[in-house]
Amino acid sequence: MVCIQTGKSIQDTNRMKFEGTQFFVKSHDEMYRVFKDSPEVLSRTLDIAERCSLRLEKVPTRSRISKFPTIHNRHLLRAHHAAGFRAAHGSAAWSVRARSAEASTL
Image (cartoon, rainbow, N blue to C red; front, side):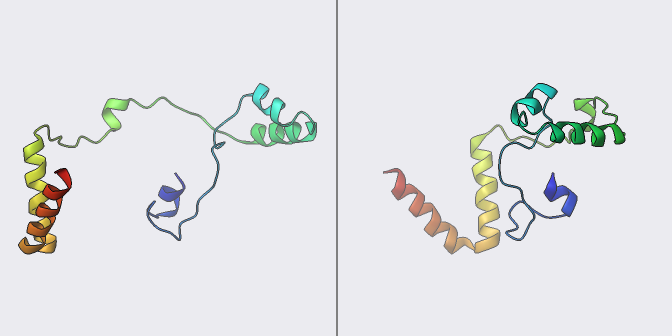
């Protein structure tokens, strides 16, 4: 979400990022367990929440998801991969890559 908001790619090493796994909305009970020794945190959080105006609507999943073609045939996928690799790196590089792949499966 941060990448979308800042116009960056997840591969960009200079992007803004947060570490951790606790980035979600917690229930009152979860917040109490985390901050039971600091009740002022709970009251300040409630004050801030009461000043916010947020309305969540359920989004119909079918209409918002882009439809991309899928390739069910593995050989067709490999042919597309080979064509793209050859276009980017040349046929000689594809020959080396193909021989390397064959050798690794032996």
